[in-house]
Amino acid sequence: MIYEGLAKYYDDLVGDEEATLKWVDLTKKFCPKGNLLELACGSGEISYKLQQEGYDLLATDFSSSMIERLNSKYPSVATQVLDMREFTLDKKFDGVICYCDSINYLNSMEEVKRMFQSVKDCLSDEGIFIFDMHTLDRLEEFSELYIEEGELDVPYQWTIQSIDNEIHQHFAFFEEDRIIQEQHIQTVFHPNDIMTSLYELGFRCEAYTDFEKEGIQEGEKLFIVARREKC
Image (cartoon, rainbow, N blue to C red; front, top):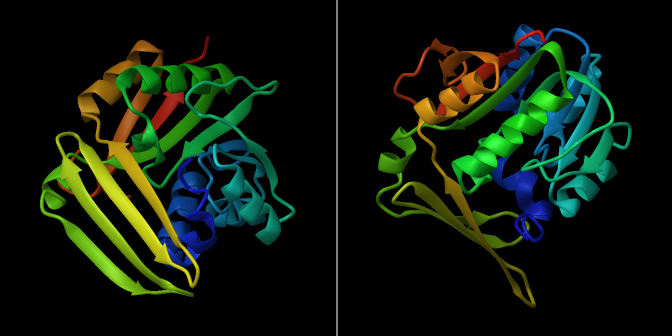
């Protein structure tokens, strides 16, 4: 399972305080109060800061290792292991968030549509769903192999390359007595397919690029803010 080996190195490898604060500000802008469901919460950096802002937050992730790491760092944050591809919960939320291009870990539009239905079912009327995803530009960016090598607690290598509509990432951590390796594959979806699926479920949508630019433009991340229509 992905993130099982990567979990203990995750924060040191990809931690970004500036980006974390931008995700928090984005949430506050479009969902200024209430209870939140966070999908694919990872190690909990965004979760904890949102809790500090006063949100009643449930942080969820498919990886039990990431949830364990979150619990060890921020025991006050409520957590649950949850598969965002299809889920049911026994309460309604004012907002659902899914950041850090986590939706791109879904393999197909069929999985995306099931996720959107699950999100709709747990949102209150006029509830807000905010998520980000890779833009199509990322496929061109990684058309040639990217290699990053460095040293955390141990030496590591991180490679990224796009193949068709997928971004393939390989992580290797060279511990003293073993090598921890993980292969991640993310699917890059066309924004028209994403927006159409949301509209068909009764969401009203706005799109932003790289946090601040309105609409779909050149950039790395596309942000979708979708409001569930009142029944």
